[in-house]
Image 1: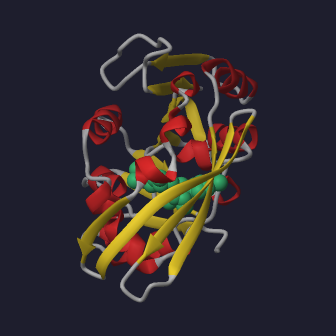
Image 2 (image 1 turned 60 degrees about the vertical axis):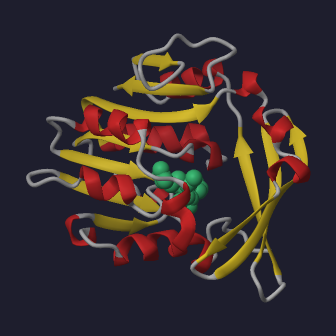
Length: 239
Ligand SMILES: C[S@@+](CC[C@H](N)C(=O)[O-])C[C@H]1O[C@@H](n2cnc3c(N)ncnc32)[C@H](O)[C@@H]1O
C-alpha cells in the first residue's frame, strides 16, 4: 500500500478516461474568463489546467502526487503551464492571483483545510476568488461504497482490470477506503484514500477565518440551491 492514492502509473493513465471534462470544467473555465493569473490547486493530470492555459493567461498547476504531475507534464500543451510539486505549502503568497480553482473534489483530500485556504488566500489579490467543490456530507455517499456495489471489471490498455472499494473507517466526516485494483498479473494493488466530508458551515468558517469576506455555496454547477439532496457543495469565496 502506498501513501499516494494516485501513485500508480498504470491507473493514472486511466484517470482522464474515467474523469473527462464535463459541467465542472465548463463552470471553472467560465469563472476564469477575463483572468490573467490562475492556480489550479490539486491539478492532478492537468486536464482542466491545460484548458485554462489560453494565450495571455499565466496558469500554474500544483499537486503533491509526483505520478499525477509527471503525467500532466508529458501531455500535449503542458508547456503552457507552470507545474509545481507540492501542496499548499508550495503556493507562494504573491497576492496577485485572480483565481484559484480546485476541481475533482481535491479539497476533500486536504487534511489541513484551514491552513490550505489561508495559504491560497495569501496568493490571491484583493477581490480574487477561490472556487472548489466538495461532496455534500448530507448525501452520505460512503454508504454506497461497499465492495459488492463498487465491484467492476473492464479492459484497459494495461490489460483486464478488476476493481472495487473497501470502506475501512467512517467517523466525524473522515472516510477511509481502500481502492483495490487487480490487473492480469494477479497482484492486488491497494491504494488507501482518506476523504474529508465537510459541511457548508465548516467550509464557510475556515474560509472566513482565512480572510474571505464573501462566501457563496451552491448545490450544483448551475446555481442550484443547497439542500440535503444536493450532491455537491459548489463553493466560491472572494477575498
Ligand atoms: C480526485 S484528484 C482531482 C484532480 C484534478 N483536480 C481533477 O479535477 O481531475 C485529487 C487530487 O488532489 C491531489 N491532492 C491530494 N492531497 C492534496 C493536498 N493536500 N493539496 C493539494 N492537492 C492534493 C491529489 O494528488 C490528486 O491529484
